[in-house]
Image 1: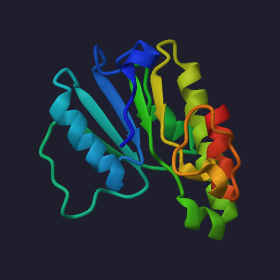
Image 2: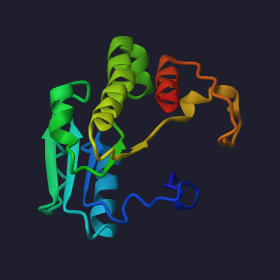
Image 3: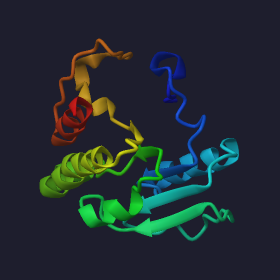
Length: 171
């Protein structure tokens, strides 16, 4: 289970933030994260779930703080609407996962690498500079990484998906 290590960063992104965005927010992990944030973050006033598809039929959280915005993370105009000057934290989960990125290289490249670059550029344009929490993948380490990986483990991706995620880590 991945956790933001507040002791390492010295910053708790939820301490004072009132608005957050989750890219890939209507996917399985995005919805789970949204539920946890809404329950554990009382000062949260707006949680923007950004995705290309709406939440599934069975998912129903009746909370006025949720705003679902459907669009493309590679679209600069869409990112301007979803990541505003009031956004303090962006959880970037949007991606084309490994098999999809391998089957459709152009789509994986566009969403995984160019979408991340567009999101970071949008955050850079803002005076407020929101914190970005990026989700990567074990695919950045390749098959020879072993059972445990750490900050010192070399990146050796073996797939286009792994390369895309490794490039994003380096951004």
